[in-house]
Image (cartoon, rainbow, N blue to C red; front, side, top):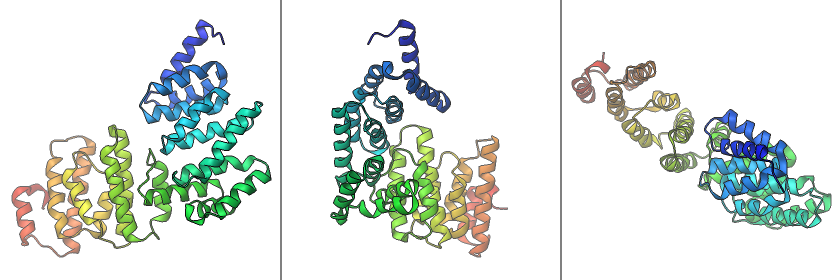
Length: 340
């Protein structure tokens, strides 16, 4: 296909925008590439091969889904092996290709989605995305897949897929995401999992939540970029808050370590958890964080110090720890301003 120079320049600019931090520009580029259509496919597939950024790859796959061109099928099958959000996005391309006028392309997309649904080695949410893509197909196809799931109760998807019929696809995806996370298989971004924590943490086993705290902290350490890391930190704070509201101290050590390591203000959920269940062992880490934040005279820095001091005083009052206590004397000597 011959592409005019002006169109080629626009496509190049739009594909480059998929790698930008500006979410508005990225979403606009995805929408515009969908309008341009087939002319953009080759440059998009080349861009996918030349980037290691999962966020950029995800944006490329979303653009290709909107185009629905058969040339994106090999890339979709490749992306299924990349796992996480990238793999889930690949099922969107295959869903679009199910209605292709090319019967060979449609049949191959169908076979790939069925195989992905039934492959117990994949994450639940990927299998569920593939299963969900099949729901628009004729009844006989969906019946065969459902029968295969029913005959494989140990495969880990049958219970989650059943949620689709009772509560809808969104609820089913949240359930699959939650169960994957409990097995240590986290998504690329924490937002959806944070929403799942908000609805499930109040009833989940406490040891399960403690395990999830450790898994999320590991992901947080490996996250690329401050923005991504802050998202995982906020998720971990939500877990700590959920544990605190249930009166559990099983991850209190992690709270103390987080305070000791904090170079910037933490989400308020961490301090909420400390207000609820902190004990004498938390007082010195709170004071140390207060002292470390002293050079930051910004409004955020000053607010953070006030919050730390407030948490320290609240814990001391609740635990009946007076200024005559050894830990309070130590704090007063080293960080005199925090104890008033």
